[in-house]
Amino acid sequence: MKKFQLKLIIPLCLLLICSVYACKKSFLDKPALGQIDPLLLSNKAGVESLLIGAYSELDGYGGKGSGQSAAPSNWMFGSITGGDAYKGSDPSDGANDQTPVATFSLTASNPFIVGKFASLYDGVQRANDVLRGIPNAKDLTADDIKRISAEARFLRGYFYFELRRNFFMVPYVDETVELVDVPKVKNDKDIYPMIEADFKFAAENLPETQPQKARANKYAAMAYQAKVFMAESKYTEAKAVLSVLMTSGKTASGATYGLNDNYQSNFTPEAGLKNSKESVFAVQASVNDGSLGNNSNQGDNLNFPYNGGPGGCCGFFNPSQWLANSYKTDAVTGLPLLDNFNSGSPVTDVTYTGSLDPRIDVSIGRKGIPYLDWGPHPGDAWIRNPGSDGHFSPKKNVYSKSEVGTNTSTENTWTSALSTSNNVNLIRYADVILWAAECEVEVGSLSKAMELVNMVRNRAANPIGFVYLNSPYSAGTATYTVQSVATRAANYNVKPYTSFPDQAYARKAVRFERKLELAMEGHRFFDLQRWGSAYQTAEINAFLTSDQAIDITLKGAVFTPNKNEYRPIPQAQIDIANSSGPIIYKQNPGY
Image 1 (tube, rainbow, N blue to C red):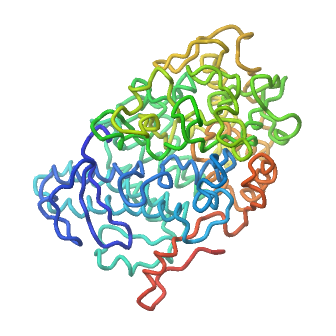
Image 2: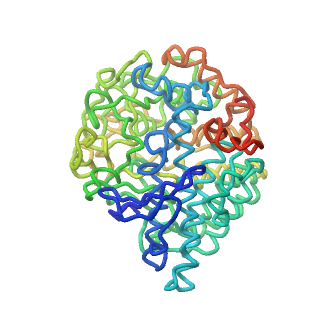
């Protein structure tokens, strides 16, 4: 949707009773606060514009609470808190907002969670405004109403899903709630049934293909149905939906879902590779479109190497040693070291000779390994503070040197090099496959689960996705020139499983495969969350204990069960809701 230069902003945060419409360059004529001008909703064009405004909030930028905290990549809320990465930068940088998120020491007034909460409810209200506006647009056909309603409910389901898994007990407001009554809505019900209903409606009413590739289609809605079912451990329900996706699913452009041959091609802003057959749903990003960089991937604009290479700033989001060690493989079997990956010599730079999964060098920038076409990663010269950042750089979100000025902005000032057209993958087809594998494990079909996991592993084993020393990198194909085994950047060795001997082993293998495949993509914390408090507590505390000697900001950090599975509801929202006397909002446990 970012191909539209007009970006309607409708900041209707949950407890702020106002509507303000704006675009990126100038304010439109607007009605008095507390009203929406009926003229904006009186025809199809107006309602479609509202829908574009709802899509616009997917990137978390331009509305309420916009910024890094609202990033759809969930780099802080999903990856850093899941053990994939450290906050990065200097310990003092973000000490009052970001560090408490990373170290599980949040208070209910933390600015980072306030921003996330506000942005998501902004998205909810934008979707609700679309639904409220439909009856006023008399030139809408029945098919228009069906599609637009389904798209709006898909978006509302997305925003509420993000709220539910981040903030647990949140109030549910739909289009039937009058704005003056919003503060009276309690947060005393689990909203998963309402989220399920939105995605079900969307799946049943959206078309299989769309005129714009960035719009949600029937199968994207089904994928989110499955994602919600997985979050609820409803494996039978998820399995049924995933079966349809894997036999009939296609992108909004009509391409049958499948794994790209080259793993690297999922993480490039190059126009010909975005929205591929593996992209089930993605947040769109564009540059040099007249938006002054505001349509770019702003949520990740801190997450580049420091003092050189792409971005040249700001040294946040450094991959962890815990993650790097996870890519060790057995020298003979080529399988991951499920139980003892963090033992023995740590994975370091190009001099490390141990057996590795090749996905490490697509996910992590390591010293001496080619960093796309920027040359060999120089190590600590690109690390802002090795005492708190470790020694690795993020890689999936960056761009190649040859793309500077094409897939980076030329329209703004100091953030030009940090404003990219790199989409944010919300669901990739690999994610779908691994959900399906997980379902097969839980229903006892271990051989089918292994077959599905091996689909992902076999793609990882394709030499077209390996990194080669002194090999030219092509942004157009997202490949390094395939060369001899001797020129591979590391001792790559990844092979398929030959046996899942029992359910416990199969479960461990599938969960570990998600860690390898989806690293640095904002999923890990939420995977751990849905696998249960005991599992999440053990995993995160093991990471915090292991890596506190590398990232000094982690010293003393601890994940507390029955509390840190979720974030606190912002205290200001509670205070406003409860200001009239009766208790409307209750805080999450532990806060």
